[in-house]
Image 1 (cartoon, one colour):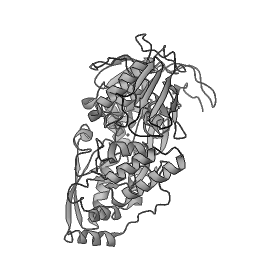
Image 2 (spheres, rainbow, N blue to C red):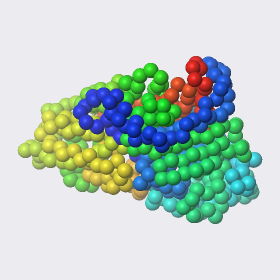
Image 3 (cartoon, one colour):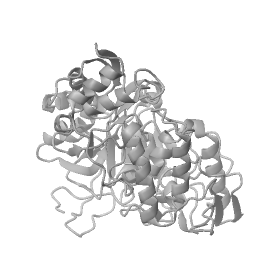
Image 4 (cartoon, rainbow, N blue to C red):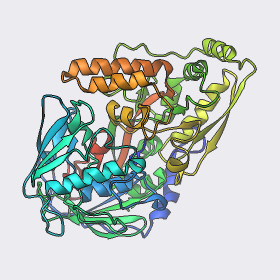
Length: 526
């Protein structure tokens, strides 16, 4: 699911290379980026670069679906990046998988794990000079909950109306059921705006590390916020340009027109050449094939299993990720601490797949349409190869390559059979957004009341090992009967100019927090 979605494929023949395409695509950005001012000091290993400069970042996004409301949907990564720079959030992902303080300095649950007391740091101010108060935080949380239909029920687990702000720096947050992972649930998307803000035709004041300098349909420029409470950001400014085509993003860095190209395809990473760095975000990219359980032919579990057994996972990984990935096993979060590590790898078994299809009444074949797009690099390539693999069990697949600008609003979560996307979010987030019966984006129509109850009970367990064991058991059920064909896990790939230092490499939203990124002088090492 996107962050943005939820995190534009290579297109054309499989294993294609892209140098010629990169040169052509560079013209798309020619004359559209400002020239970054480079700091004069060098930065070696362990040595800080001199402050200053503008980071030019091209990232997945479409002006057609851009928005200013941080509490609505996040269909564009470009929007999510802008929000992460302009607005404070309560917690952020830590390297150990646990939440780290941001605007919330500390938190403490009561004995029932349903009432959490959040202590906000002092000294935080909005860019118009107003202090950030608990009332602003509570207003923002309530607004996020109220807009659940737009933001995939981002805070559906909380009763924000029952929550309170007893003083200017304390929020008592009430969860609808006992939950030991509330700090993690507040990571990265709890953007705080001033109380009463409701008109987002223009951005409202934020309290993040940067403030808005200018914005048009495609490009936003943010500059350092001198009043931010945190450690002073190293960059003067960041230019964020929404570019849907990953080849054009890669070309911009190769041509010196951008400093960072987010989410490029593996072919571009392999052919990047001298003067361009490849930054890997390990094992964060998935393009699962999504089958809806409430529509034919996928309402029959035998068909779903046959489609999983027909999958040549290694061929998909080799072709789509070009060595930047590994096979997966039909579960969307194999990197999560709760992943059941004793689960046997599902093999490719064409004979059993054909037998299952025959038992389901499809001995003479089956015709389906598989939707895909080029929103993220390799989505279309994966669909084309999977269509050929399904032909081996008598399934005729028509691949529909749909426009990237509208794919996540017209196809994702709606079509019977399509290429999805996950970008490194935890299992608990996937469950809340896509697997619970009442999930706003239950894309596979996985509706099991007993499963829902067991998930809620697992969240109430304070001991990590016991909770993970219970969550792992739920994933085994999903592996057996669910509607996801998760064939591989790829690295997220960004290209940068040699001067970029400190670019985040974590999964999910962690990559959007750029306040520690810096620029070194040309020729600097480390």
